[in-house]
Image (cartoon, rainbow, N blue to C red):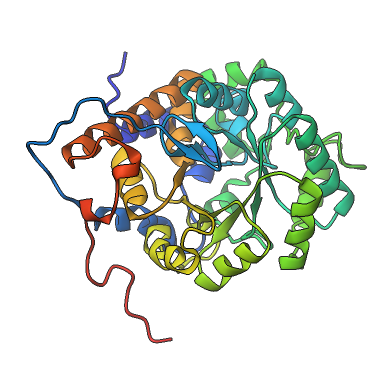
Length: 388
């Protein structure tokens, strides 16, 4: 049994086991990948303050995100194609999150459907919505999420058009994989993945195939998806979606104070400081650099969460100490899933929890509500000095 000590340990196993196109889908960004890299490296610029001779007993990482009790301020982010990383990947990740006590967010572009995940879990999960031109399909998705008792709708705002990811184009990314000579040669080396996928519940996008007229196979799906993301999405449409949903709404993709203030106006229960993991606007600031200005803009009027670049419990600790009420992990749990299935997701959560708990204690804090910027050393020019 491989000894797992950190998230990077999963990444090495995941790379060996997953087909190249799905590993590259996870482990890449758009264009030059500058933002993808800096999402991670900018966390390294922040330092923690060590404190000693402090009572470290009775610690707890428990807190709440949008009023929901969580074992630590971490949710599993919505990740498309999770069911291609491992057979029934969304179901296995959702079960791991439920057992651990953190939220799971199902992507619109998941392989397992809303109904699949609801049928395999016992507690409400969150559903992430991409807005499409087909308004009837969007309304259908919202109703299906309601029927599944999803406890929050996460509306992604930064995918009105698709950023170019070079590796996806070169690999011919599709679900299921198109059987080209190159793909078949690679799949031949991933026999364990192939055997597991033979028994998977689905191998297409479960929220779409069978729910959109005229979409019945991969070719139909590719053509439909390519033209469906809604470039006309605006704040009025977001307000209407929120009204149609009628429950808690989290707006994901906020990187500028002006947009954060608009999110307040439409009544967001939380906003996620996010650059889509560096997969959309290459050259944007890292999420952790953008966080302080968003916090200044909204104060305590709504919860501020953050994703992109979080690979450790120390990263979670830094984000929460800066003022975030919650964090999201995407790649970190996918590494675990691709490496070891449900057990890998559970272990990834355990690794992040232990890192956060021990680091929090060594900073002289025992509870989440005791965390603040006073445990951090932040570079004086961390947010950058930019000529507007």
